[in-house]
Length: 443
Ligand SMILES: *Cc1c(COP(=O)(O)O)cnc(C)c1O
View 1 (tube, rainbow, N blue to C red):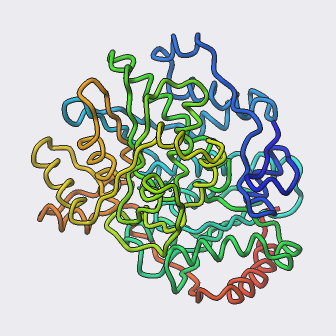
View 2: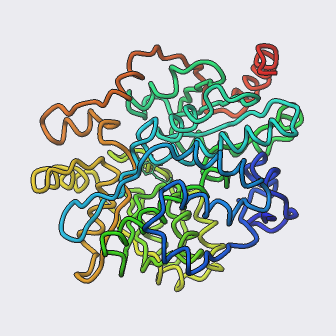
View 3: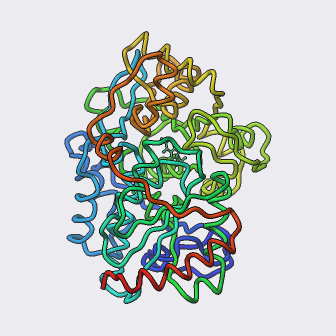
């Protein structure tokens, strides 16, 4: 399969190159040349298949031309070693629980898949060390760090905004050591993202070291997220609830929902999507006005969605040929402020005993408001509520329990390198670190 850049200036390239590059040299995002439809037979029997079986079929449609079936199967099966159950919350609203992986958030899927894929390519042909740079507002860092931990030939640098991620999130990527380095940036998430983008475009840096991204700009991160949309559908079909399915996706950088839109293109019968935003409402505004106007991000209770310039917006534009009407026909919008999020978490807990996290709460609220009676709504519960323990404790006025997986991280010692949001600081650090890591090496 060939991949083209959304800016269409650079040439099409193959999978390996697209994954190792991350961002195209013309600053565009890579898109597959073809989105294959899955056959009717697949959808007829989908409810009898396991999550891994379904995902392997979907993965083959994207990666089957480039990776031998046995290798691809190993990558898929290793990535998806946990369940993503569909759980009824209230009436015709269901939660797709994406928080049963190692760091209890949906990004575990893409993080692990990408780590395995990159390690497959590095092991095969690239004889240098690959350096992954990733900007995080919380969950990306932990999922990528844990996905890549101990993976040969890859060093991971995580850039995160100082003081703007929860303690539990921070502990999950600052305590690991080995091939994971956390960079604490004096700035906000958008600063971190801008630094990473600039690093990829910096010629001097790229001459010295192989850099790639593990944000959802990397197609190996975002595409595998389409797997669980199929599995959600399979579970609904089993319950006899698969007609008129509406999926609500708490969205920040829009990688997750874009994977859902890909699933629909592959034939998954989803009626429509809702992109649920917090107060960072760039996409919501785009739907209303047809204008995409990035802004500085604002801090909210759903901090993994505090994104003022969503990277994957351009993929959505490309997918719909920049047609605003077509986009509005398939994707609705919603936006919630902190008060509404808090009220949503509290009331849902009181009414249904279902504990939402602040991100899932946006997805749930959007369905509550916008779902028609004949429709079945599924929101993506993108993280375990305990990842935002302080926020949830405050909202409920009681202490919630922390699952053992998270407690383990809390015991580790935080180790970070503090940097300003000046690009030259980052560059200098990376160039120095390169020698150090090359010596301590994985080869
Ligand atoms: C990353 C994240 C989101 C936003 O996902 P995008 O793919 O960036 O739109 C939502 N919720 C949680 C918990 C996240 O970690």
